[in-house]
Image (cartoon, rainbow, N blue to C red; front, side, top):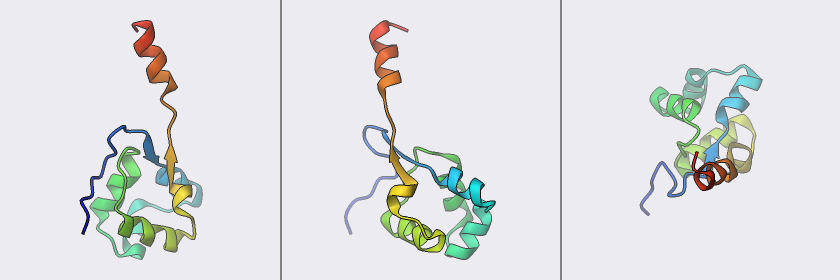
Length: 89
């Protein structure tokens, strides 16, 4: 099995699971029961947008919620960070 890290190296890939679950009025605990995942895992994905689930976990969530991986994982813009660093703020 290839090495897997829960955070990306540049921290630009983020998960938007919280927004999807909030829109559908689904708790992270309910998702854990339906997906047969650890409540700790689903809670971590829900609360930490920088936490990227493993491919297996992402697949389970996508199948249960009937969404594509791209609906959950997004690329964040880091332009605000660049402006703050360049301006000395």
